[in-house]
Image (tube, rainbow, N blue to C red; front, side):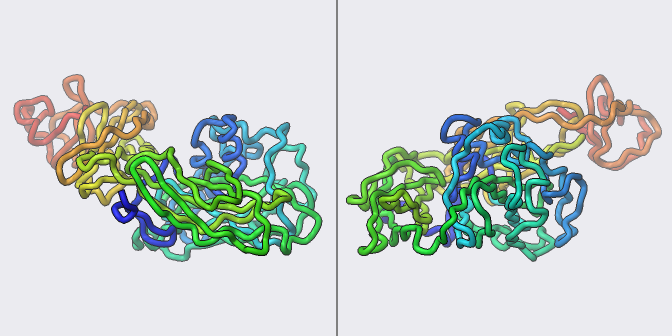
Length: 461
């Protein structure tokens, strides 16, 4: 199959959205979480989901955004000693102080590109970058006292309120590169990158370990490979080529990364690579780095994005990715997922609760709020995609959620001569019912389990 029959674009162009689980991470320089995950020391793919309350270094929740008061208020940011893990149990290893973490050699004052790779689209408010104090103590847990109190770099989205702007305006782009002028430091230091979301109460935390060298950085890094291109795409392979960065600069080898993870190193005599470990109908982002004879490493090249074709012309959509809850209340469960890919245009997403098809949303929607739930109750959800040929994907991942308690109070029993509003919940006949129409219960047959109750009430299952 020729590359012309597949879809691939540069990272700064519009792309069809299909991504791996969770939300986002710093792909270059590699974060502590990415190193640990690659070594099998933390839960797989959790480096994309180190999510906690926004507005670090604040310690409390319920704080409105100073630049956009209509954004969601925060929940409490991670506590001291659990900043690297974001208090995620599966990432607790990242908070240890007895580990010799992999470090990136950098130079004081160097302009260094930090590249974020995202696996879910969110309307962002800002990116903040913090650095440990000049006199910080690596022998103590990471805490607010170990970091400078203010970020040394901030990237702010000034559009608000966020709901008046489409995702194209509020979305930082895939990938997003920030060129940071590093502070003046010596020796080992920790950089903390925080991606804050406008429409939720959370942010994503990324810790990067740096080793500041004493000599100046000018000319210390080899140049990055240039003109990286995709030459062929099959359902099970992607072929790349690139150009030598400079004929006057000795390069020993190249490192190829896919979706922010290193996948192979090859000798500099080769300037091409075929990745035979890909899946059909999946998006991949590739970049290449140069390594010189001293082990100095270039910044990543410009990335290229490719979507592999299907292995069959009649293939159903791929399953939606990373179904997750954005929060539960007594009466609601807020769901979000990542898009499917389909050769035939997508038609809709189908939401299943406890194995039952309960709702459909247009393919343009990647979130939905279930308002037909009971408090203090567990539910299981999954989502499928369906295309215009009515081909349905296999299910997404399954999630289990538990709604909030209503504080111990029972829903009231249905009563005569009582005014009921739409959405009120009552107990009748050993079941819970939701009011469909405002009315006063003048007649016993209007009870939810009565002969005429079906016109006024619906059972909550």
